[in-house]
Length: 102
Image (cartoon, rainbow, N blue to C red; front, side):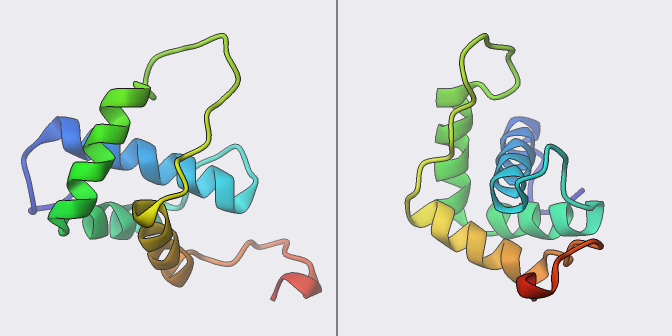
């Protein structure tokens, strides 16, 4: 996916973070397109502060484990705001978007 790191655990946490952020932004139960996902993951991996924050989130939430509880939203912090802004700048517009979503 990227030449920025070989840390597979960090890459996994970044992919999980991006997928969760996409679900929150798009209100869909799916994943971003591979191009969008890869750009956002690379954005996270290229920034040491974002990488540390996403790793801590991944270790705290253990997003890859099944749970009977309700899904937890991502913390609305500086990491969220920075990654969200970047994702919005590269995210493809939904195919069936309403006119008022332009």
